[in-house]
Length: 419
Image (cartoon, rainbow, N blue to C red):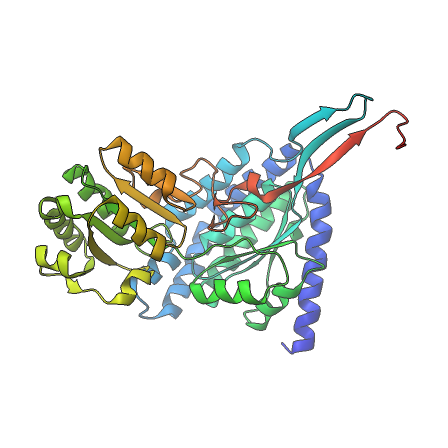
């Protein structure tokens, strides 16, 4: 597609999304619920087609790392989970029309603040095809149109998923163009999305550091930031050893390629001799490579030596950095220096230490005695998420349908004029 043709295509895509959003934004909640339910049924009915498309994507991926293939792969359970997620989104309360503030002046002029859609949202993502269903469902629930641009590695899977979702939207009598796939893998299409201020109200990047940094640097459209998940588990001096083993192995190895996976393990010196050998052995048995600092390697010599850059690495793989720290202060200092503001966890039976950790760690999600893999909108009860926002503007943490709204003020008078 030539550059002039691509510009026209993207402009037409944006215009169609804007038109569809106007209808969607004033649609009854029951109609949007029906569309989500129909989309879920279509996903289940087309599971064989979606799996065939995904098999082609996996074949084209070749011998990419196991964690990458896990992010890309679909199976019947994951398709069912996508459909279940759409139904869970449908079951939540309508985020639109909610009056969250209301007041009346002495002269009778009445004010209220009401939730309304953001408008048109563009989502740029990479290898995880389920993002397409989650993003489409959440935007639909909140009355937003969405333009989706997936990575080339998942293009067949994403196309099959979005065909099912669009069919469900149309079945419910809403405009299918409320969900718009970018029809080309030309990388220049991303550049157009970053400047389509006339048609796009918010841009959400879901991908690696290079994608997020490019979007942050070049976008003229407001961006809801989703930085890398450089997450820590801190095993405090008050941690139960068996609990620590169970949580750390899950936090790292349940799905090492997702943004909620733990990337660095911090172990308090007071319990390093008693706890670290068991944790290291369990991680190694689960297939994880450990890269330790000198103090950690002195206790578990089979670890590889850690390099300085390891503390700033989002592995997205079965690799973890391990450091022994002198106590809570040093753990907090390490997280402040190297964390990405995504998800941080402390394992301890000491309530005072846990309270201090939860108060002082500056991250979107902080956990006590729980795996970082709970960093997921579905686990928070949102049905799904469009991402984990690591910034501070508009939304933070798992972003559900209610976070994809803005507000307007409605003012009612009775012939009021301003003196």
